[in-house]
Length: 412
Image (cartoon, rainbow, N blue to C red; front, side, top):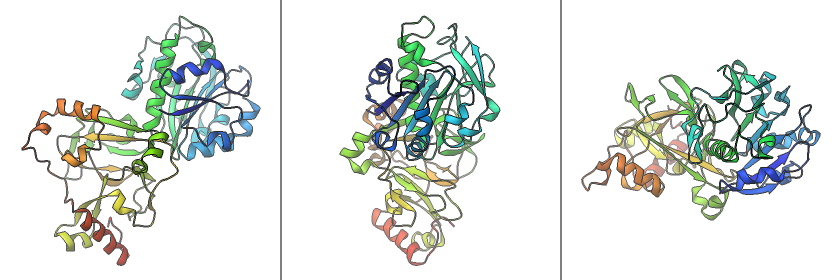
């Protein structure tokens, strides 16, 4: 369960009509009266509507610095905007580069390549017919060419270059922006966008935002945000060539879960901390997720230059630490036909390892689905083959200690 603050720019506080879509999806709704650092500190997401057709809220603008800082630290910002004109002024980070056009259209379609969690999420299905036919269903669009780095288009007008809704990463958080005047549709039961469709739209939006950390994965089509990966995508692997993703699952860990079990907190591997400028940007992984060490030190210890080491063991290195500041996190599990080394933010990282201990990190429901798809995992004689040597925990610690003692990068 996430804690979602709700706020309306003109009202200067939350609207009662915003609550249903939050609570209907199992989250806790908090009325934000001033979007300052104090009130944002406890939120997983801030849900904003601009109910004005002629301006942006002065109080929101006055607190944009605090909002941007909260997003950078891991909060998700969800905005539904009526005004649209100069929307770049209300968007944190690289959202300031967008070009907006205010115009009315009744045709809203799903963008090509929208994440499956948005189009077919646990809260329902969104398709080209879901939002079509409404009077003033959108109040404009953002041009595709102006979207910020890492942005993922979600909804368009009938013209695929006119973006009605998109998301993009800012630091450890994410921003969702849409030109749909959702305050209008939440105020009454409209035939164009019904309450059930609002629940689906809002719930699926939250779902993809929670695991959209903006982590860039190397794919056959170039670098793509992890949230855009789908079953069937081809991913370059370290042993050569590409392999097809067979299964993807996400684990959502809320602020409450993190408070109850601190061991669920992620490890932050800061940019450049592994050596050779890698990872290219900060990378968040679970404690037991393994990164590839490639060095002469590893070769002297194990007779091979490569070894997989758990992130928690790497915290002995400068720039690698358990991040105590994140409010929530989504872990993404990617499975191929066999264990592979793939690239996340340019750094070599493992895919899901199907050994019995590793599978314990996968939630029970997802694990059951995995066993149905790959029944061989349930057999007593199943042996997972690692993509590289996995030393014991003690030897992993010794490997990292030797790198520190000799001031050697772990990825040479």
